[in-house]
Length: 313
Image (tube, rainbow, N blue to C red; front, side, top):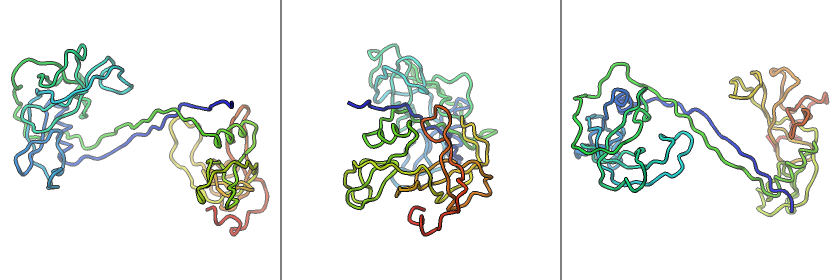
């Protein structure tokens, strides 16, 4: 049985967004140890506040303070906290209806074990020691025995309002290619490019997908293509990527390998970025020990005629 290939992959990027007046006041309030909600037309108080009523779609803007104490309405125990979660020891995810609010706020509850958590228990906010105007300014909730906490009297207006946030988005997963892509990856380790031909339309797809995306039938006939190809289209990259040791600007393009009916992507090197053009004939450049081409460079051949690759642009 062939080896099952797998590899850990991470997709990560910072998500930057600006804040409207409601979210700006809410996050600035957290920085100042104040919890704000927003009033709806029918008198409900929503926490966290939103800019539009989820029932009527009415625009909302009347801010009201609620207490930093509340009641657990539902919960679930987290036995194994993950990276980036509020606590690094087992805790409960809780939905807390803060005193003065008509909706629940989701956050972590620091409790010694699931036996210490129950619906209806009283809790209060544990504020983070350092606060910047983010939901993490609430470090977590903690058990509390007592009445509603006193309000500060805030009207939602503060100095130096928080106007935007940067939220890191990250997805960690393990990727395991199927039969077709495993064959493609194994061939690359021998510095060969292998695709699969559709038995119906006879097109050769690289990388192979195990099925023809046009006809929907399974593919199994392997076809070696390239190694040379034609640059069908490209873009000039001017922003340096994190952990990528390539100086900008550089060119990234779609390359139709000779014999393939689908263009793959790769970096174009060995030529000034402002001299790259559609139809440029290129070949792969490998590094010692590399499992895939580091980049593609011009072959010196005449440019390909547009009609020969226009279907692959």
